[in-house]
Amino acid sequence: MKFIIIASITLISIQFQNCNSGKSISNNNTSSMSNAENKPIKSNEELKKQLTDDQYEVTQNCGTEPAFNNAYWNNHKDGMYHCVVCGEPLFSSTAKFDSGTGWPSFDRPFDSLTIKEKIDNSYGTKRTEVVCQHCGAHLGHLFNDGPATTGMRYCINSAALKFDEKKK
Ligand SMILES: [Zn+2]
Image 1 (spheres, protein in one colour):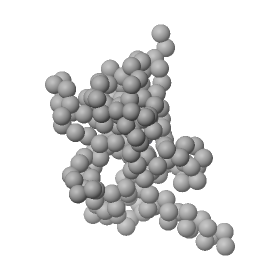
Image 2 (cartoon, protein in one colour; image 1 turned 90 degrees about the vertical axis):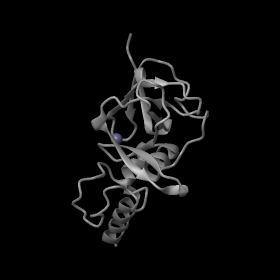
Image 3 (cartoon, protein in one colour; image 1 turned 120 degrees about the vertical axis):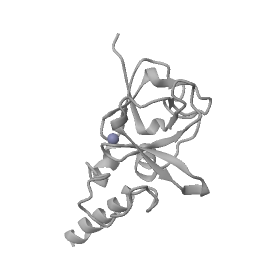
Image 4 (cartoon, protein in one colour; image 1 turned 135 degrees about the vertical axis):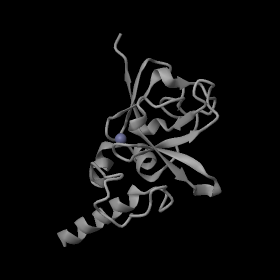
């Protein structure tokens, strides 16, 4: 009985790993459990305990929080935005700009190695999904209509981020 419960929990967590249900760029070996890509660092149960419902929905189920009604869209403090799931530093406040969209927007990641881009074909549009390289958490989307410095706009959900204010 216990085995069945564990097996079904494992199955659920596998399903949640791939938000685009087979639409990601590198998708030629999805059945392999040894694939290091998006390897969960915590079980589904641990994540549910650690995260709020909104944080869980955004990072694990590719949810999108409401515009202008989230923690950081209008945050102008200096500091670092970390992944809410694994704590990796993702975006510096120096890269944040007012996009007018109601979501935190950045023109570049803190380190390009901490961010992974995937093609997202959901809702009949082709968009670039942005995920945490370390834990695979869904963060938001990338658009090429950003400010002139880089031309990029990382449109990120506050629920995927944890802000650490810089100590003065
Ligand atoms: Zn992460």
